[in-house]
Amino acid sequence: MAVVFEKTKGLTDIPFHYCPGCTHGIVHRLVAEVMEELGVLNKAIGVAPVGCAVFAYEYFNCDMQEAAHGRAPAVATGIKRVHPDRVVFTYQGDGDLAAIGTAETVHAAARGENITVIFINNAIYGMTGGQMAPTSLIGQETLTTPYGRKPGNNGYPVKMCEMLSTLDGASYIERVSVYDVKHVLQAKKAIKNAFTAQINKKGFSMIEVLSSCPTNWGLSPNEALKWIKDKMEPYYPLGVYKNTLEEVKQNG
Amino acid sequence: MAKVLMKGNEALAEAAIQAGCRHYFGYPITPQNEVTAYMAKRMPEVGGVFLQAESEVSAINMVYGAGGAGARVLITSSSPGISLMQEGISYIAGAEVPCVIANIMRSGPGLGGIQPSQSDYFQATKGGGHGDYKLIVLAPSTIQEMADLVQQAFDIADKYRNPVMILGDGMLGQMMEPVDFGSIKKGENHIEEKTWATTGMGTRKKKNIINSLELDPQMLEKHNIELFKKYEKASKEEVRYEMTNCEDAEIILVAYGTIARVAKNVIELAKRENIKVGLIRPISLWPFPVEPFEKTVDHVKGYLSIEMSMGQMVEDVKLAVNGRKPVYFYGRAGGMVPESYAILEEIRKLSGGAI
Image (cartoon, rainbow over all chains, first blue to last red; front, side, top):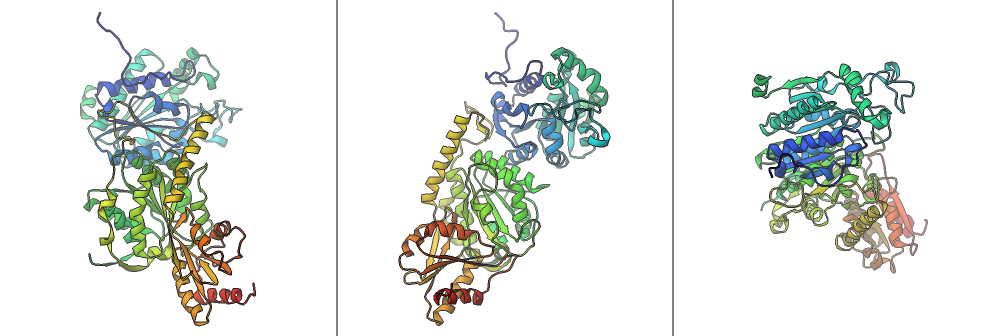
């Protein structure tokens, strides 16, 4: 019988630990499928973050290093400078990438470090139990903003794609989401573009994925997907923010 | 090979390159800036990588990445910068990644000053970062020794898969002395294949993971115990020290690095006054050499630890002596280097039984 679907070779057989309805699993699979389709699994070196995706080093079927909180782009830089011909990626959450690791993220992009960053933005700290993230929305209730995030006290959410796309070292920056099948497929295309940018030695690439956190948002998985669409997307518009891949530009 | 007149910082950099180091990550800080400048110029010449990071925090994590990916990698800084690196150093030790870290110490705490000091002894030898781990710490006292120890440090780091720290000070970094790089035995520096490194799987069946996370307390304790077995091996095999005039000394100075040079001068000054003074110079600060104390404790009147700090190594001296003889301390802080006559005055007091 013909095989019509099988699990990607980019993931190991270790079961994910993620909460029901969390979209980390979807994004893991997309990244793994892209690496398999591009034929780079045997030359990929990933860097896992601190936070919910801390065990990413167990899940991706390639060499992996586990970084300290926020330092993944620096660790990836070290790896890439030793092995410029390998495919090096980081997988990071919003606390990791946009708070404690802002400097590492901005400067890896500014250097045009030829790595790919997968950025999971779920507007909250997941692993530590639901505190405010730099990406939490105005008015969003979290453990550390129990009366809602207020600009006067907590400042404004950080828009990483907009910020990084101003840097000359960035080659491909896109914000996607995974709240329905159509957007999942678009996200995969974006991730492939980001890896392609790296393979073509274009410089720093990042895909921001608007993701769900049903547990810490206090919503059902379905409600959480709707929350991404209704609440997050208006503040974090989807789209390509920077693209130096000429052929992709032409294809729209 | 002819000797070359070099600054300590430059000799450190050149020695690393000759030991096969092709990756350097750093961030400028006084008084070790010659290393970054030297590496920026030399690394491209030898096909290596020099990268100035945006911070010490980032630089040490680049070292973690590069070391984990199998490279011989060096990072240098000075006291406040080393403090920033402690997070990364703990991770590197936990994940068992080899690298060489040089601290060209300046005075502290806080921003302190830029003059030479030895006030990071505790930080270097007792931890610095979080968790149960050890660095192997080597302290040169001449520029030649700086070069020699850097070479050995790479081999030791690879042997134990552990960070090795060269603990120098601003005086050693800034002074110039002739160095002979010909003494480096290239054969000893051959780099074995690092089968554990993250190089991309290639044809390898099993993936490699560099990691320090272990949430299962029993497994983490096992990891802690394994690390300490490694440190126990190092504490037997990596002890280095020098003894001068200790055989019949009544007072033995204990000093490392720059101040050990002053101590040698003091021995001569004391001789003129018929006071027999010896010197124990620990070269490895961790593992701290106990053996020279065992050899001398029976005949010596007492030990005097002299340091460019408010007294840090003196605690290890006391542990080594273990109450069998008195241990005294003399030090200067703030970036001051103790003068030979001031040390001699302390010795006179000891010899005369005044203290």
